[in-house]
Length: 319
Image: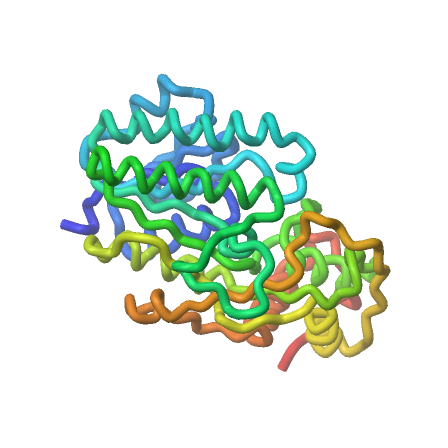
């Protein structure tokens, strides 16, 4: 019966969504609906072109009673949300609130939300637990946290079960995108192309970097385990500085990387590592170390030289 559960994924053509859809198809789920304003169709899922924060008639048509909803759609990145924060709040907070009203009216089965463990806690010297107080220092973290609070109220008032996935810093995009999304993906792209790597601050900022396959595994657990509810940190529990990432990438490429340091930005979290004990107790744990994840990602890029406009000499074959 679980394989026939209707699963609606907003933002399903994005970074996390595209990987999740692939895994659901591999696991033989039969009823996958993806809503995205830039759909990238895959055989085995139904794709609907839709802005889930605006196209309300389409959303109402697609959300049905008993659906399991995975809400990944989001309109801004961390840096852009601070530049246009009014529009950020209007689209992501108000838009999600309207979306939740439709979910309530349709009596959905459960909603799983991708939050940001890397921003909502703010700066912490120790590993952040789900029970810790939250002090976002950027607007992206505030909007994510606000949506978490709305989910709690909707469960309390309307009995809509939810899972909040507080993801640390995911990496592992399959293409060398020009978009500035994620330090590891950007650093590896620029290093392969021989371009300077820009770092805001002194490079000592510490993050918890988690490979996309591990993130997807937790979403699959949240989908498959009906009793799983509440807030979960999803990271590795280990911190790595930007300077350390440069060393790791340099080891793969066989030469040192020389970054360009720029003045630190106030909205950047200096230290953030997640305590993942609760997720482990739910029978999940990360499989990838940062070194392994980087090597897997590099091999992925290496297999697509022509797609990325790279010469054979630009890449290094790993053993």
